[in-house]
Structure formats: C-alpha cells, structure tokens
Length: 425
Image (cartoon, rainbow, N blue to C red):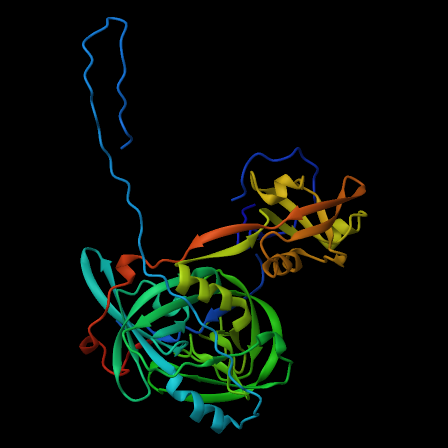
C-alpha cells in the first residue's frame, strides 16, 4: 500500500491499517479527504583550499597555492511595518465593495509548453489583492503555476508587469510584486474570529471576463478538511458565495471590510453527465498563511512546525480488538523530533497536552498551530500499556524564492484586458 507525500507540517495522512508492532524504523517514509476541483480562476487557452605537504625524500620545498571562490548571497532586506486600522464600523456589502474594489486585481499569465518539439503559448487568468502600498500582491499559487510571464490589471484600467517573489505550494499562495507605489492595500482581518452564518463577500474576476464582480453569501462551515484536485489537503472555510473559475486568488471580506480568506476552490461534478454543483466554495483562512506571507517578503523563505511522523486513523475494526482510537504512527523520520522523543512505529497517540486525539487529521491540525520549540506532552498507547512522552516541535525551513524562469516580467501588450477566450483559474 502506498502513502501520500509528507505534508508541510511533518505529518502524513495515510490509509488506516491495523497496527502491528515492529522494531524502531530506520527508513524515512516516503491523506484523505473529499476531492474538489480547484476553482482554476485562470482560464486556459489554447574548490577547496590546497595545502603544502612534505615527503620522506626531502625534495626541495615549493609553495603551491590554489584558490577557490565561494558565493555569498546578497539581497535587499524588506521590513514589514504593521499599521493598525480601525475596522469597528459594520458596513453594507455595497460599502465594502466601494472601499476595497481598488485593492483587488485581475491576474493574467502566459504559459509556454513544448509539444513534440513545438512551443505553444496559452493564457490563464485569476484574481488577487494588494497587501502593501508599494506593490506586493497576494494570489493563489495555482493561478501563476508554470507561468512564464505575469500581468496585473487594476480597477482603473491600467496594467503592470508582475514579478513572482515567492510561493508556498502546500498552502496554495503566491506573492507577486509590481513596480508601483501609492497603491491601496486591503486590511487583513482575523479569520479565527468567524462564526458559521457570518456574512461574507468575494470580489474577483469570474470566468476571467466579468471583471471585479461581487458575490455575497455566508460562512457555511469552518475548518473543512479538503483534498483538492491537485492532491493538496488543506483546512478551508466553506462559503455559499458564488466562487467560479476566475475567482481563485481573490479576497473574501467580512462586513467590517477586512480580508478573512482567499478564495481558491469549489466543488464540481466529476463527470460531464452530472449536474453542476452550486454554492459550495472554499477559501483559505488568512490566519493560516499570514506569517508565511510576511516571511516570504522579508526573508525569501518560511518555516513550519515539524515533528517528523506519518500517521493514520485507527479503524473501527481495529478498535473492536481493544485498541484505542487516535493517530497510529506509520513511520518516523530519522533524526526527527519524533525519533528523539522515542515515538515508534505502531504507537497510537491518544492525547496531546490532555486533549484527546481521535484521528490523524486532528494531530495534523494540532501540529500546524504549534510554535517551534513548543513542548507537547503525549499520551501514547504501546503494546498494551500507556506511556507519557514529551516531544519538542522542530522547525522545517523551506525556500520560497521564485525560480528565475517563473520570475520573468511580462510585456503588458501581450495581455489584453481580459481578452476573449482566455482561460480561467
């Protein structure tokens, strides 16, 4: 049985199997959830230093010097200043739109592919929003994935070439930069302060043609575990706002005018013979990605909490044999926090800091919210007995620097303002 790749928090989701007790593993391990189609709001168109030695023959000494070069990176440091804005006034959807439409953008990309030796170029379009007055823009990674050139369209009708600064594929976010100042950034809110039923509005570019459209709805559910068509498992908020192809990367606002999510996915039919599924869209909670975005801008990399285990659910069939529910350890990474804490294959993690663990997804979500260096107290079931272990959450540093091939600036003349027939992400 194969397992999916380890997610960005150092844990895995795998198909459940009854635990067997085995020796401590020496190999590194190489998800589950409902499948949705990404709201592909972009539409697709067509040397070392040498040393001197001596010998026993006492040959004449001769100094030999070799030189080598070590490259040291140098980049301009960006410091983010956080400014508090009074957002205590409750607004109507019309007021939210008027206050923020200038902060939203359309995004178009050019994607060049080789097909049997011939190069073809297609276009794709999506949405995004301005997060700083000096030109930083946030969107979905899948909107600009594989793009050779990126262009941004503003509400006033102007266009600007964009550079890809960095991205995180696991959270489906990308940071762009345009050479403009004096822009109107959005105000970031607190997605942890939401309730099911709260009114929200989305501003984006559905179909890549209906530019700067507003759709309104409510929060339908919080922390939905969703596996996208790209195979990425994420915890998303669900909304009945109309989220269509072209909306990906757009801002989801509350009625205080704050961005509390990034629209990125929707349910769709699995076959062409099935009816379309309406009013089930998803957005990335802004709290999940805010620190990553700030780190990408300031440092060019980001870090994530990491413990280094693969886990699966304990099936009800297995529980019928007397084993507890929890997160069953399938493998342990070498030299990981889990290995240092003496976690072993087939251990079942039943509690973390006194909180019962009912399955693998709960453990994944818990690790995701931890800070590096935080000590977790685990209750572990092992071969008929319960053990108390402590594990120190580690740090997994991941580069977010954009590849040079994906950082080319586009010529705005190549990107008409949402031209006809363009692809939507």
